[in-house]
Length: 118
Image 1 (cartoon, rainbow, N blue to C red):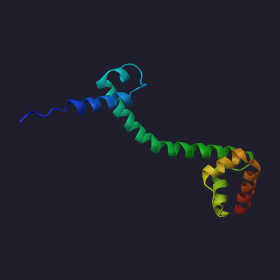
Image 2 (image 1 turned 90 degrees about the horizontal axis):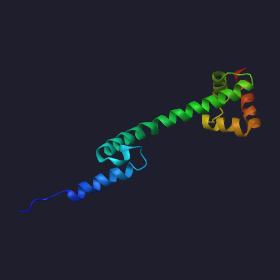
Image 3 (image 1 turned 180 degrees about the vertical axis):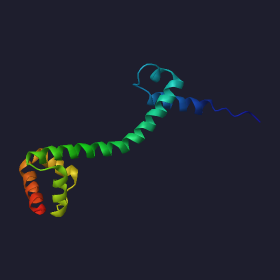
Image 4 (image 1 turned 60 degrees about the vertical axis):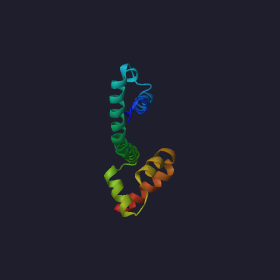
């Protein structure tokens, strides 16, 4: 029986890694072994960072809301407490967008939150 070789499959696997490494700097895009390692590491980081991105955006929204609420003379934590008591069901992303694009509407939300606290 003839010996089975994996030349085609291995070549295809290597070329797939090289294709993914296209655009990397230096040997990471030119040298096969280094490129394969770089691709594996990049894919692992991409997985972690997809989850991390959600927290990053939440922090951004909180910062934006906090800045807008401070102009109305209120702290972020008191504002969120007031929003909860007033039963305003807007998430932080929406509140952030309101604060940026619709300041008048956001001021109405702040007023309702203040009223709910007293």
